[in-house]
Image 1 (cartoon, helix red, strand yellow):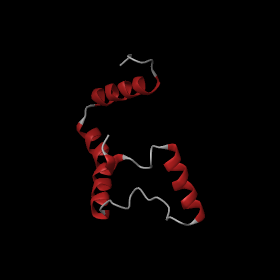
Image 2 (cartoon, helix red, strand yellow):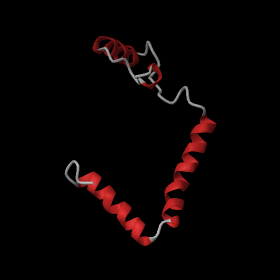
Image 3 (cartoon, helix red, strand yellow):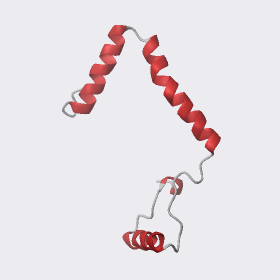
Image 4 (cartoon, helix red, strand yellow):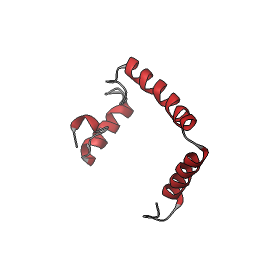
Length: 82
């Protein structure tokens, strides 16, 4: 897995040290969004808010029903029941 996707150290000792340092004020609290561009985050959020509604408007009632049935099966059904 690439380094950029790791949120905290994987080694338990390093993680414990980081948590103690954060708790005692030796190190600032970890912020996963610190390296993200706020403009890009806002743009992605904006598109995400519009996407589902626009997709649902383009689908027929039968297609929406099928998509909902498939989602429910994935969420609540047995593995492999999709």
